[in-house]
Image (cartoon, rainbow, N blue to C red; front, side, top):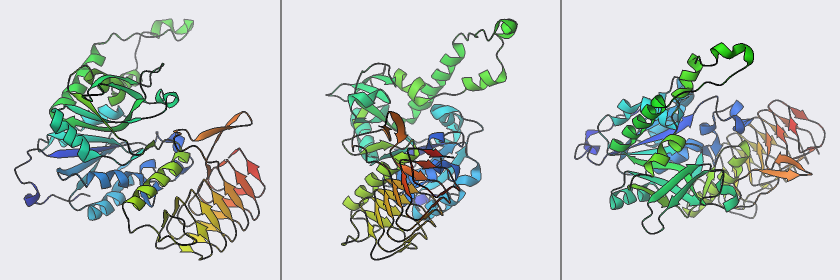
Length: 440
């Protein structure tokens, strides 16, 4: 479902019009977001009281020249139906449509597949946002840079520690002009600590020819087979349909951006504000904290009023039932129809809808799944990680474990049971103390 744009909003034809595309991925992706993605697609997971993708839409709605937004992915059509219906009411100036890929085509392949729809009305610029990033989305500033530099493309960048940089796409830029000189996706050695934030602005007449060139380059490249085994020597140069399909996957990061850096018109807008990837389930906790802090700074009326027992910022859904003696915060989100008993302490955590936390329980650095129950005097806790860290795993006793404790859907924690640094799959009852485990 989408709303049509009234004619009065299309002044001056579509001159200078901008469209936005949010890349939402698909069901075979998001495996690192388990067990939470077993029950809800990652883009629709609630962080700071709203689906992850809602935060992208909120930023898009603040760009006056954008009236059309496309979600591109390969989830079933029904997955986003309710979200689009609700968002069309909340953002009446935006027409929001979901375009479903027939298979995973890659971040650039999906854009190219739906190029006719995206280019309808001849937009001048196209924003492309990955749905799994958490940031302040300075889209108007990127647009301004495009106009100032007559840029063909602008990428959002941020600085990280040198140790973390090689886990991301790295940008080498001219510090004076901000022009991108070199781009490498996940380099093997250190080249820069300025990294790709997964938010782009392209000139429409440049983006699709660049993707077409990458597709042509892929098609022209000699394709060599590998020897699978001595018995299968004869067929080792035969390419099956699966190989052909893999050939259709074109990615912005690996196939497009590096080539664009060879032009003189590719620039980086460096944000000094917060940025996090939401890859693992545990990374929802730092993202929740950052979005809550942003809401607090902007004076959002959605947040609970600070008090002796509410240590801001805290989001409490209007349908939740929180006992006045419970102490919540900072950085806590309480979902719909949640029940929080007397004397409960919750800090740096997300409690999802229909969960129940009984009296005097303590929840720290954790995600409590939909409909889960935490018993009286129970303790569910993760481990705090440094604010600057982009990693949600830690080393304990020589073993890599998740820093954030996660209870999947409808899990139960018994009275006085302690759960520490665990990931618990849905429908499990924990009747004894557990730590550093994946409970299947």
